Length: 401
Image (tube, rainbow, N blue to C red; front, side):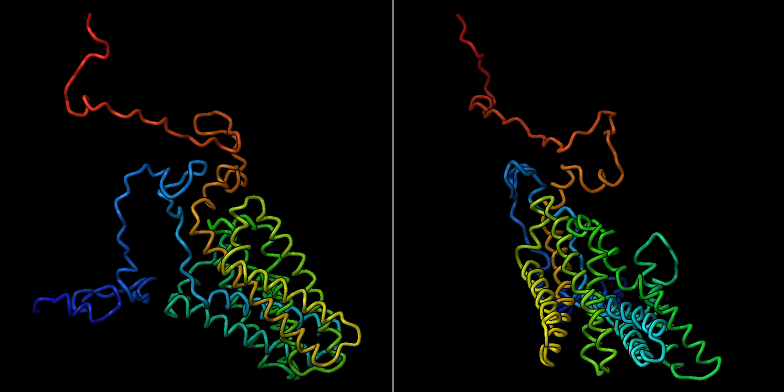
């Protein structure tokens, strides 16, 4: 094997410069590519100030103004997966309820919900695999079954819902025991659709990202109500009878009202500290959050408008769909912005939020009671050295008599 020339490795333009003859890239980050090595590894100037006083004001010290936690590496397919998976779960629940309560009159709506659930589960799996990079990584998530892990339970709910919805679709309309098996599979898919519609919010709230953690009580309600809105709006865009239209209208209206109320609750939870609420007011996440609220409110208004026409129904369904998608992307980008802000991590901890709030710790490791907000320790200003001391010469502080 000849010598390896750096210029040959740089021609790969992946920012790694790894020779495949000597090693192989594998693991979670193997598929990532770096277009500009200078941007991936920026050179930092030498900092000559104390860490707690670099890049921030003295009232809110941090470590050189750098993020305390890593920003999520998820790409666009994850918030889209949140939406599609939520719609699939909510549609499965609606289908079971429609067949159980409406009987033969809503049988076609139930079958349509089975199709929406099955297609949604398949697309959700594809979006998740697209973010993971390789299909075997999704299979590795199924090697364990851990009830305390939202990711583990969500992965199994997705797989189980996909299997049950697929069986329900294939056995729909069959007579005899095959039809009963299909109906049973639809019921199982509906039961799995409940956690599938909102587990992603529990997954976000279980992380260390400040804005996700701060909204852990209301975020699952927002995702589940938004899933109901998305499923109802999508089904309203599909062909349906006048009897089915009343059911879909009621279902989507309940989702829109709940979504608006849950959005207010999320905003209220995040308003405990300005740094936590900031991503919902500023930047890309803030604009998406406002757009989601406007779309949900406009869709609800069009749905309740007396004597609404066909175009108003279509516009309301499209706005409901846009609002549900914007909600997922808003919380996704809000989490990224919150992770980049070091004060979003430090200030809640000083105020007794986070671990101290959940575990109920009232005493420090030395046994002294904790008093929130925690005081910020500051160093006393250093006295400047005298020129004589710096030069090594010594003179007495007081003149000799």
